Amino acid sequence: MCYCQAPARAVTRQLTAPSQPTAPSQPTAPGLRPLTAGPSPRAGPGLSATTSLTLNAAVTAPASARAAVRDALAQWGLRHLTDPAEAITSELVANAVAASSEVAPGGAAPAPIALSITVQRGELHIRVWDPDPAPPPRNHEPGTWDETGRGLMIVTALCQRWDWYPAADGGKYVWAALSLTNG
Image (cartoon, rainbow, N blue to C red; front, top):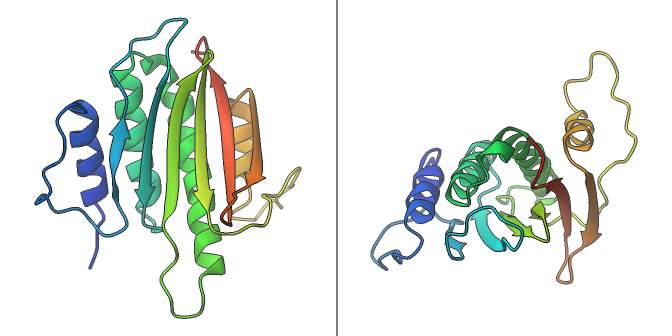
């Protein structure tokens, strides 16, 4: 069964009307936790908001994550951050999908991954969890013909800073920060 588009539709519906709770009978794809969003703040010095999403570790996860970021930034009045935030999110989520797939036991489905988007203290923070505790590679130089290995180079070029830390219950978080004044 494919849930290629269901997560993106669920995200859009939740973000455009965060004050309306999802009805318990509304179907959602397995592994998709309803998006949670705080109030609908607008850009300003005291802006603080958070949104989070759990996604299946599938090839459709980056697209669903980009949709969540795009909708959250529009709702928060931060559309000027959409392009770099979507690119960063796409790379971090794609890496998390790969990591989850690599550590899944033979024949088992990869564990879901988690995305959190937070605005606080003048920055947009994009944080992704995956079940692999191994740190992401730093200063990796992909070969000319390598098809992978450039994601964190893109993240480094687009954000003010990025890093990772081990999760208390296993796995790791990889995060990146963008200044709200970028654009």
